Amino acid sequence: MKTSITPANSLIAALAVLIVTGCVSNPPQSEKTEAAPAASTNKADAKEQPKATPAASATPGTRTVKGINDWEGEITGQPAANSKFKTLQIGMSMKQATDIAGQPTDQGAYVTGKAWIPFYFGADRHRYELVFKGQGRLIFAGGSMHNYSGGNLIMIIHNDKESGYR
Image 1 (tube, one colour):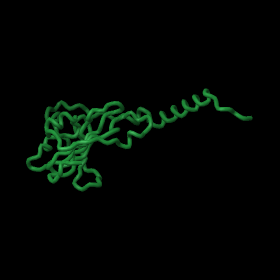
Image 2 (tube, rainbow, N blue to C red):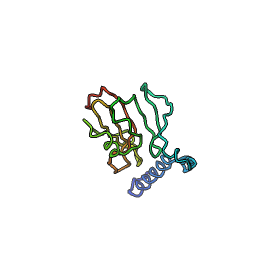
Image 3 (cartoon, rainbow, N blue to C red):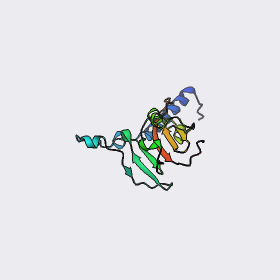
Image 4 (cartoon, rainbow, N blue to C red):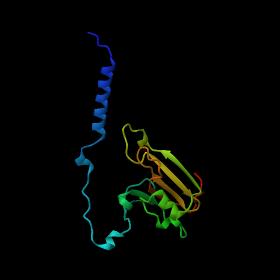
């Protein structure tokens, strides 16, 4: 018996693929959530600076830190004596960072591999890089789908020999 391909059969097959893909890409809620840390009433804890945590990194001198609103990022190198980068924190918005560091010498954007994942609507689909001559680079993770704002600071690269151009 020969089965012909009809629009109804194609629609059913497409829906089946969507359902299976959605189930695979979205783990159960119990796997996604983590226990929230207990709220502290100590005012000193509330203003605590992000702490560096040891991490295996391909670049020597790179440390992983947890910043504002639990954003995780990397800081490479040490700031120069006169660097405006000293007060930057992982998780800052691009506007906050440029208010502190000033206008960059060069800047640009690029997409990440997450941009090509079907049905991925999360953050970090693109990155935005700001380059500052004699100070280093700031890299921001772009927002989720259709959010083309600058995103949040995820990487600070201190380099007092930075040329200022990408």
